[in-house]
Amino acid sequence: MTPFAFISLAILVLGLVLVMKAVRVVPQGMEYTVERFGRYTHTMRPGLSFLVPLIDTIGGKINMMETVLDVPSQEVITKDNALVQVDGVVFYQVLDAAKAAYEVRNLEIAILNLTMTNLRTVMGSMDLDELLSERDRINARLLGIVDDATEPWGVKVTRIEIKDISPPREMVEAMTRQMKAEREKRAAVLEAQGVREADILRAEGQKQAAILEAEGRKESAFRDAEARERSAEAEANATRMVSDAIAHGNVQAVNYFVAQKYVEAFKALASSPNQKMIFMPYEASGIMGSVGGITELVSDALGKSGSSRG
Image 1 (cartoon, one colour):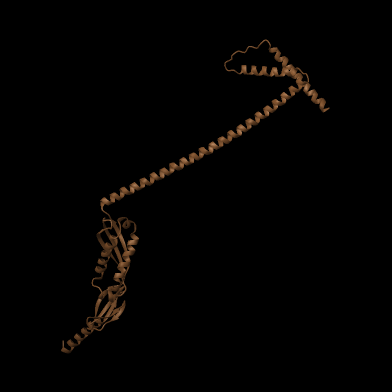
Image 2 (image 1 turned 90 degrees about the vertical axis):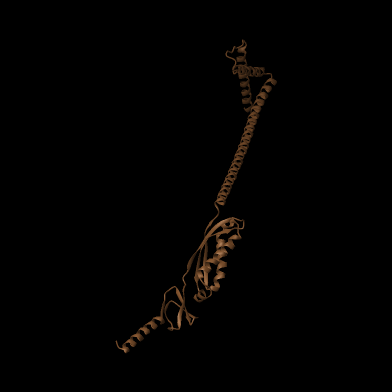
């Protein structure tokens, strides 16, 4: 090979190297920082970019996509001196590649340590019951603190989530006993309320039954009084008729009263449960005579009423 050919080949190789150094292809989701003699000049966006060979260099390759970091489990002492194990996750996204490259060193480690420190601070100011029941409030407070702290780094923290809160076994057993006692208490209260409502309903039913029974007795007494009144009225009318007959000299009216009492006495005697045999007195034929007198008395009364209508 002649010297000219060797020099030409060397120039060609050097040209190819310079072209390769000058041309850069930035993939989607990435941004490259460009340094000239060690000083930041600009940022290359996704696509085809050019550098000045031997002068410009790539300073940092920054991932602009949202990234997740696992927060390792750590011990936290709560406000009421309870020791718990806590872990979580952090979601962040780089918005300014230059700041992320030059404002902080080891960006992920910085975000992780910042999150862990503030996690202990926030959760240490709360009681255990608040930790277990208000995770959303903890996440919101952590997000606000960490996002404000990472803003100078060109980073946006989008979410911080607490994955697990693990109290000690002794505290878990105590909480289990407490929840069991609360459930038993609620059950006892509900049972007492059920018994109370049942007693109230039973008393209301008895009250209504007593009211209806009293109304029934009242109605029955009213009707009994009405029946007695009508019976007394009828008996008074009969007595008036007999008295009028006696006043006009009719002796059969007296026989009517005697026969009535006689018949009532025999009725009581016959209805007695201790009497198995009934002996009729010798004067029983007088009853028939009294009945005949009653018939004549009625006939006379009917005859007079007919003549008065005529």
